[in-house]
Image (cartoon, rainbow over all chains, first blue to last red; front, side, top):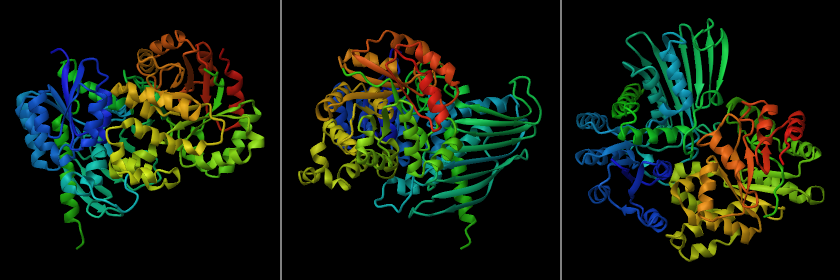
Length: 345
Length: 293
């Protein structure tokens, strides 16, 4: 393969960012985009004359014949787009949440695996310098077996009653605090601890949204005795930027982490890492690795370059594949089921 | 191109921005909730010889600009280096409504004073259809109006926008931005980036010159893509009559001791440094350590 011919389907906020990032990859050529907005297609066509633009994703795939696509449509359309791409042997990077339906997630996971096409979901925390470091330390046994954890995420995404409705207003379309925000906190648990065996005590609150949840909390239980809690709020105006917060309590110590740094408490000195008994602070500046092109955080570049490099067989492609997408979808589905059963009336 | 100030006082410390520690950011944001405390720090900076201010067009910038305009006899000699836009304002609106409705709101909803009512009468967004340049100019006007009447030397475009557009290879947008800032605002166009070597190469290729480029520059390579050696080479081969280079994040959010940080900065062919600090001791120390040619 010379250059990867790439198409982007859905030019909303994520599509616009992904275009800029992946366009900088030396082995990628963006050949086409699809969106339902004529305005964005006209603007792109005007400033990128060679780009093929389409109003329909099927036309994009049929006419521009990309090797790979990036899918950034509303989540309820992910299934049909990915499915069509799979039928045409196209590698897919799909934004999170993977689908808005658990059966569809399972089907896509199996179909792509059977065809050995590169498939990746946009759980970007797996490419964050701090969380990659946490993963490494857990694997090395720095804090021993993890007994208890908290995974939290706070954003100020919804801070008043909705004036207009969009796909974000409905769960069937992939809207709501669980699909949009908790998905990240859940994937971090899947990535660092594993998929929970049972989900209990889920409750959800509405503050501003009419049809979807604004706050969710739950408890995850594991067969090996580990348990942990999830707490996510997308109406929290005390946070200027989205924040993932993680607390992991192990038998040899504890880790507190967010996207920008981590604190490690150890019960004894650790010879391998050099961390001392007691508190140790690790800043992002201690562990970051640079990326070739920066738009909005190293992790965003790293995840898309990983996708391209996996197609080029320079990476294995399994760091955040559709089975990770399915796992998060499974947990989110359980949250909805459990919270229904916990309602008082 | 007019020479820019060698030392410029930044504003992140005032607005709860600290790339390293959310906790530290929160403490500072509490301290500076009372705007008088911000003015006190500015006075310390000016007493230590600083005569230039970089200020992002965030929620509180309007009030700060009003203050300095209203005290012109005392502060009239200062040079201003605004940066636009305030990215989080847009990020939140875009999350809620989508991109074009958000732009529509910014341009048309609360800006009758700007005289854009005429645009609405002509058909609102339809006028902007297919013309990203016109859209860009209107957004610049909305953001830049709070600095009117101050001695504005450079108008910077924030890195989130610059680097996004850089990825698209949109020569025309860069060219038109620079021309617009020169002609309408009689200021030097400024671009903030986390990709200095790539941006500079592109500007040369596009023959866009007489621009100030501001970028994170620190010896550990934090927020410097692709890496330190490429930065050093780019900076040291630069002709400052074409591009004046300004360093920010020189301490890498506190990861580097000031003395070491500025030894590195002083060794490079840089024209300016922007830094933020909130204590007299740190301001004095930084001013004494910066010694660029």
